[in-house]
Amino acid sequence: MNDTICALATAPGGALGIIRISGAQALEILSRIFTKDLTTAQPNTIHYGHIVENLAIQFPQVIDEVLVSVFRAPHSYTGEDSAEISCHGSSYILNKVLELLVKNGCRIANPGEYTMRAYLNGKLDLSQAEAVADLIASSNQATHQMAMSQLRGGISSKLSQLREQLLKLTSLLELELDFSDHEDLEFADRTELSNLANKIDNHITHLAHSFETGQAIKQGIPVAIVGKTNVGKSTLLNRLLKDDRAIVSDIHGTTRDTIEDTINIQGITFRFIDTAGIRQTTNEIEKIGINRTISAIRKSRIVLWVIDQEPTNEEINNIVQQAENKSVIVVCNKSDLNEYHHFTIVNFPLITISAKHNTNIGDLESAIYKAANIPTLTDTDVIVTNARHYDALIRAKEHLQRVIEGLNQQLSGDLLSEDLRLTLDTLSEITGGQITTNEVLGNIFKNFCVGK
Image (cartoon, rainbow, N blue to C red; front, side, top):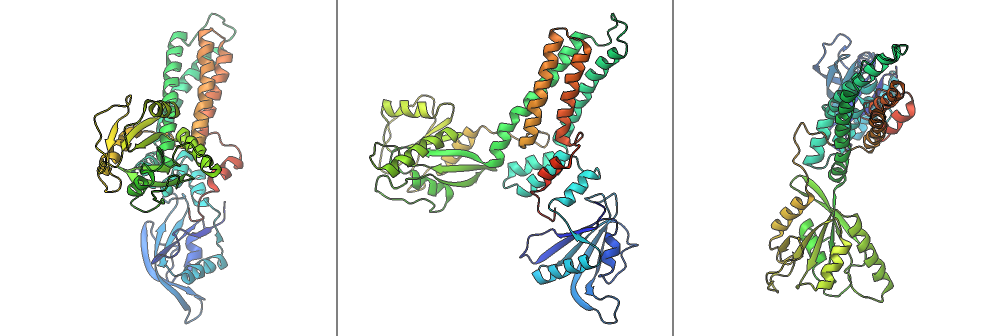
């Protein structure tokens, strides 16, 4: 970690490219190939000049005309002396600049090494470092908002509050252990401790429950489009996607496999799955498609049940059974051909559309967004989106449950104290306070690009 590192921080093919340098010798090495001495440059300044090869000779070869941004430790992304070279986007220029930097003492950064250094130098905690990757991968307003909240320390702040409360519990119990010779001495009121432990448990439970919503927003909310053959499911998918993604035909059983694609509705990503029409068939391939339809329903959060005529009681019972615990929207299609009389299907909302003529598709999108039941996110909301964080919260809750049970059973302070310490250590895994091996760090940072 004492090396000075360099890497391309922008995607190839653009008009401009940015090369990052970080480390104790960053400015010294850069000065060897730049037409200005940067070793005495003021922090947070930008310098115009040229990257050149063989600076020592009278007429060195100019590689590019660039701007260099200078940052001084500890006020940089990594907490080290750093610089960013803004070059033209030519792959030859960028590779040549990297080559010159390496020849003069840099090494190419490992994936995620910049953000790892930021973590190790105390610029970010571990949850914030992971938020950098989420921010880069954000594909809609909601995922961007969640990543920004975590990057600003939303989950860290919440865990810090829980940590202070847990430390209060632990310190009171361990103080009793220091005076264990006095059996009648009790510093911690057990009723107060029990109330505090239950309060902390509720906070942890709330955070853990937010993971389902976080995952849905991050990965896209799955929506299965189901119904009998030839009711217009594929036409509807094409309308929602605004693209001819699925084959449309009057022939029954055209769709024999699931077709999946995503769209953005009011800042949330939805994954639409067009499924094979459900009917009795002897075709083995179509049977496989129907089985996958049933599987898609089970995995979905929302089911669009497309019909082109009033369904029978048997059809209603089938969808109620297959889509149990799902949000079902009944889509009455082909309104240009059929006149739907007023009818209700249990508590399912009904939307009348014509997929062919694009009628009421906007109303259907609004109904889909409402069915997702996504809470309105604010800058202060903390939503858990990381499986590692969720796992730590569940394990912390298990330890804390033993504390609560122990308080109810009036167990001794030494037994309670051990489980409290385990709760603290488990929560600390989220922000990195208890990281002791490089293995955990490696698993987190290995999926970063080299420029981050």
